[in-house]
Length: 334
Image (tube, rainbow, N blue to C red; front, top):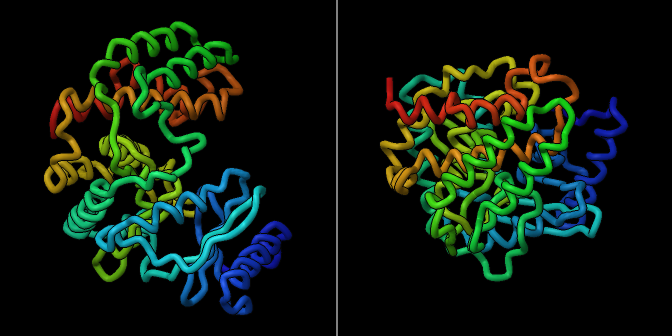
């Protein structure tokens, strides 16, 4: 971390953060440290956290609406102020002690990891019991291309698979197989509706850990009404591919084998997260919906044999061929 004045981009980001502090009625001259984040500019003062979204979608406005209905058991920080315009918006919250659980995970003991998962499950369950605000705007580019409450919730993912067939360096037969699999499994989703919230991005980067305790569940900008096992998809993905869900500075310390017990701990402490009929098949659709969205956002620039192992194309292919982490779970704990 640091103020980062050696980089023009970082300096401008700091200016934006200080402008947000001033607009929130706080001291804009306090020391600020840049924090790791995948989607926003995040800065920490001794007492507050400042997040700036540079995209014209008002995601942080949505987050402020969600934060207003969350019960204390979720552990979301107190919102001080929100503001901004069409091109960007910002959110200032009180700072909660702790570091992202993903950053601390490599140094935790197995018992500490199990306790962390249990405490996270409790906070997540409280969020899952919360009714979504009626005036909550829709999420743009939600992680899974599925439409809650629609007659056919798989319409968006089927359309995306059709679009992906026209990409270079893809096997259209694999994408046809993916389409047929989604169509075959679609009845497992029904009825695909809910009034309660899902987090939408519940990775260990968005969980704070301090002195042996989970202290906060952060970043609810993707939260929306939906079946709670949409969050199960994100958690299982985080455990299977943790390198994709940590900041760049922490990738080298992140090992998939450190996460192998996470699904089983979740099942023990939050069994209702897994209690939909044909649960693995439901999550298989979610996984395809996530990966094809990622594939369209980052199309392959070379043939599949030259792509990195965790490229969206290979992740999608493994799900379609039933050779993914979901199939390991389906066979039970080893």
